Length: 337
Image (tube, rainbow, N blue to C red; front, top):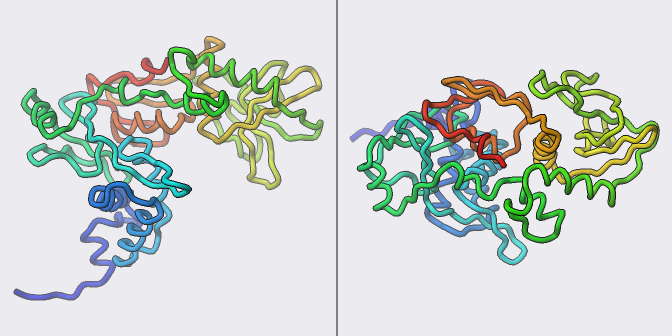
């Protein structure tokens, strides 16, 4: 037996912690996060994050900025849940499940990894954190069931749909999809705007989404409004942003325009704003546009976190707002009620 000394950089490369451009691999970070969650089970979030940062540092990888972002993606995928124990935030592994996504491929959701004997499908690269598996026959599905891995449809995975979390916050009580639809979520925001919205001064800088769905969306923080963004809006209620205290500081909001008067309701975060955009389109009968081909799905709008995660389940992202899609994959957007 021989012992060979290697550098930290060589170790990072052998463990595939970095990609060919020496960027921290999100796929590898996801694997590092699953390890303590699988071993420790219910654990303080800070302890999990520290463990992963220590592992990266030991291999000479100084850039750990992706760690909380990857953990957030694992939570949205449903591999683990955030829960409070006392006043501290903990992470709890979720029940292992798998979701069929077409052409004999499924997605395994669980921090322990697929059971022994279940074949893995190829990863989509350093940014692909989804655990893909081969489920080509009834025997493969039965093996997963015997090992306690339950099959769930995409519709089950989407339940509860993400806008209900924001609706519950505004209602201060649980919200259910049989009482609050996506369209009525927009009604709720309009009611909150009427009751709690604050008047905007004449010189307040506001940008609203006015262009037709399907057009180039543009950036809300571009030097000048572009794409579907506009600096003015006619009478009505609009999804918008209003400038804060800095050049790049914008508040996500819905605004009501009535002649020279404008009122704004600040939203909780960008995720609630993205659900508001979808809800407004649904209420007005002008849904946001999803372009689907035989092998890909392209969005023309910024999707909420849950729906971006659903796209990650279906296939690997090949460009911003573009994901691969296998034949027979479920139609996520038809399931958004």
